[in-house]
Image 1: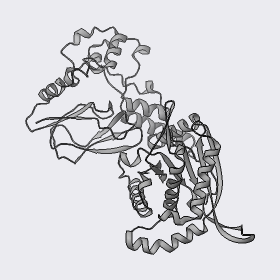
Image 2 (image 1 turned 90 degrees about the horizontal axis):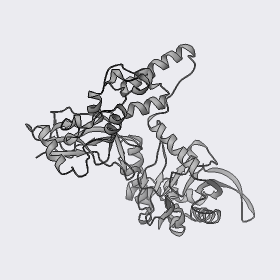
Image 3 (image 1 turned 180 degrees about the horizontal axis):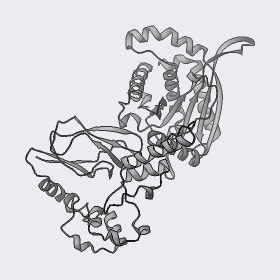
Image 4 (image 1 turned 180 degrees about the vertical axis):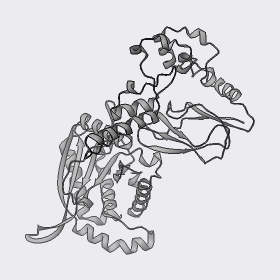
Length: 430
């Protein structure tokens, strides 16, 4: 029996994906669970496994294709099956949702004055759908003025050219129906870098692309849409550090995990969020959605950028569970083995720059969330304790919050609550 493989939804916010590459060719055998292709989403690039065993009968979405979720991208069936028959069978159940002419084909036909009835029954898309390439195949390309023809490209190539600052018209291949693809843009990029290095060899050019581009887009979205306000507060971490030192051997023996200060802060933040739920919220259109589940993201710095794996339902987990799960998430993130669910559904975020000797900073809110907690280094400093000066282990907490969603007083009360919990850390063990 044949199966239509559709674009998977690799995350709750994913609307479309770009096919980066296929690891199998048409006609090759595939086993359920074997990596079949690589897909790029708005968050990351990841390998996708085949949901069925059989033969890859037909690839409906070649490399560089941008496909909405749940739309067909491949046909998997039994040896000897014909892709044409399978397409016809699979499309019959979708004929109500799949129009006979794609929007791009309709637009291109209108621009070039082509009667779509000439292509009736000749569409090469899924279920005989007329796609843009069908229109261009009969279009009098050579008779069109150059300024109207433009340069055809795949969506991924167009996006890369825009990110790299490359003039798409300079990549025009000059062949009727030809399309500029990713490799053409990369080649032009390499040539431009070589030319640049000949002029100024002391400049390194790093394209704003891939995960760096996605981070830049998210940072810009957050910075220019959410009015950030940052509150800073000093915490005496002496007792927290001492408690961690005391419990380490028993935690390692009993739970096989080594608790970190960040994990103790995650637990303290979760306890405080239960008392201050307005910070455990997301802004959706014009509504504030307060979440019952506390899903805390922990920012992890990778060589190519920043990712935020999320510990789910922290309110139901003890310190040992939080420690074990966060370490597994962070390890998958650092080795590139994370899955979309690892990074999804966060309601609050913690970012710790203490290991870089940072004392105070203004963390940028994850788009949509109400707040983010920045953590500075723990440093020994003189402090007044019961009228006497002592050397204590002090740390700064920096809370950035979206002023559209809450005001300064409730944000300050939350931060004060976290301080109280960390200065009386036995509560994090309960």
